Length: 112
Length: 116
Image (cartoon, rainbow over all chains, first blue to last red; front, side):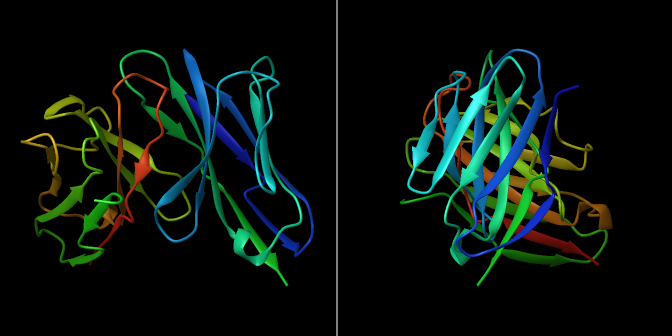
């Protein structure tokens, strides 16, 4: 059975802190790892990673994938209150269509 | 439209009632997915459409759940004889292409279903 495990489950930090969110996975026929931010209801896409060791960046957010150790991290530097959200990790598989398996998410709260 | 839309945004049903949840995907998107998200959990896959064809319904929890996309655009998820355990947020997502792992899924705002 495919598994995606995120840690920590929740995190409270102060504005300006740097956070690292973790995602480990066990899936057959791995194709891609995706990060989403969920603030109210709709998850919004952040990154898709398919290759090990290549960092993807978007502003203060960055992510990297390690396909040998089967994990990914999402870093957020200089956190702001607007970063408060649930961060979801999902893994896509090869074959047919993009069926993804989601982790339970990390709930991040950034306090002023 | 500009994004994926879902209606209603909130639905309260009495146990045993039937409900229908609607999803309008982004125009031209081939793939459409339905997910169920319970409180404190990540989205769980329910079913997948490629155009009008339902290619995977392995995630539907029981035969009370039925989904359709008759013209390859709008989709409806129907739940018959609702039970309290059906209470969740139902998310719809669409993506442009059908090949696996190569395209981003765009999510709608979800429908929060509460069964009393």
